Length: 208
Image (tube, rainbow, N blue to C red):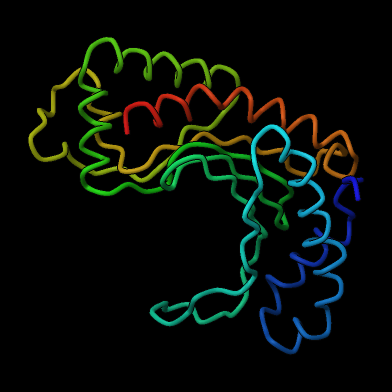
C-alpha cells in the first residue's frame, strides 16, 4: 500500500509511552503501534525505496543488558537506508513529530583516520566545509559525536579543527508537527531532503 500519512494516533502513542514505558502498556497498545507507526513507516520507506534503496526499520525494543535505563521500549521509531558502513539516510517518528537525517553515525579507527586525512587535504576538506555551510544556511542542523580536544596527531590550531574533532557527522531536519506528516506529501518532502543530503553521503563514501 502507498503511504497516506502518519495518523495522530502515532504521536499520541509515543506521548503515552514516554509516560508509561511498561510491558503492560505495550501489550495493551501494540495494535496501535502496528497500525499507526510500524505499518505507515514501512509504507513510507517502500515509497522511497525505488530511489534510495530498501530501509531497515529498527525494532521497537531497547537493548537494556548494559544500560542504566531499563525501560524496555524505544520512544521513537526509526528507519535507516544504508549506503555504506554506518552511513546513509534516516527518518524517525516520535512524540515531537518527524525528523530526517543523513551522514555517518560511527566509524572504525581506520575509516575515521581516512576521513580526517581527507578533511586535512585542502581541496577535499574545503569541499566538506562548504557543504556543511550550505546545509546550515538551508536550515539543517549539523550534528555528530565530537572530541573535546584535538584528535591525536592533529594540531589544535588546524584551520578545520572543528571538523577533525568529529567521530561521527550527521545533518538533520525536524518537521515536528507540521500537517505535512499526516499526508502522502511527506514522501516527496523526504525525497527532496534526502536528495539534498546526497552530496554529504557521497563525500563520506568517497573518502571514508
